[in-house]
Image (tube, rainbow, N blue to C red):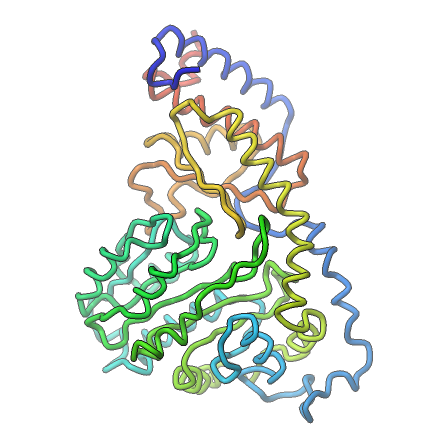
Length: 433
């Protein structure tokens, strides 16, 4: 079947009428599905819920002579630091263990840089004037919201299948007001790209003009394969050290998609100097994080090898959902010339690049039919997609039978939005005729 661009106007009108009829049928199913965030499903939460009873004896809370129930150990229990060092391939002394949200620590790093400066800062960022931050896009909306909150100028850097366009990054960091960059290096949100070894090396070897330039390395999906075996990934901390800039990077991860998003543990990793510096600043804010939860996680997850086995069980739940999404996209949208997408091997999202000018309309139509997806523009700084094209699909939360219904709605709406563009008329106008 020819792409829409190669069809006659009469053929497009016929297709449009078919899609409108299909859309009306789908609306009558009265769906109410929210796929706006990458939330684990109940099956995934049930999978690890035996962790809740792993601590049954108060004496188990005493480890290495420390009582996890009491104050102290702001940077985390030693066993928790060793666990995350094993996961991230760094050293325990390079880690700081936080609460359930790595986003909280990311915010804190930016906030401390703004009010106090980083280890390498000549002065706090609040005294620097117009701070600029690089935002590889499409990217994670919550990253962008942090830097927007502090009034930074966000500069979009295009993403490639190998990571951010490093030629552009290397050019932009020559500006001393460019203070940092957001990165999701493995199974990026939303496209599912993994940075190439060359890209990671180029990051480690950056020569920014700002002495306190900051790489915010959000390694949220470091062990989150759902298609294939675990793939090791370069340790950015040691690479930056080898390149002579050990303090340039802060790495983040959490158990949010391993155990419970609402009550997991997170980690911040960096140079020993950076960890000691930030621990002093964090110590003004809190005495310690939840060490009982840290201990619970270490006893349950044990080490990297065992955690990967846990993630294989998650993959048994996740993989069929992603295959469902990709199968329906291939069947209903391929050869229409109105969208393309990447086949991710891990992470939590499928990103569809729709025909320019149709993303917002597609999502509007989906919502009318009872399917809520991430807002249009959310994957770009300031919520503005310059091409109105990128759509993020989060398949994890719905039951697979609901996901199938949602994808039929999505593909129908995607085609209607494209046909409206080609024909210069809206669904509403046709319905009124």
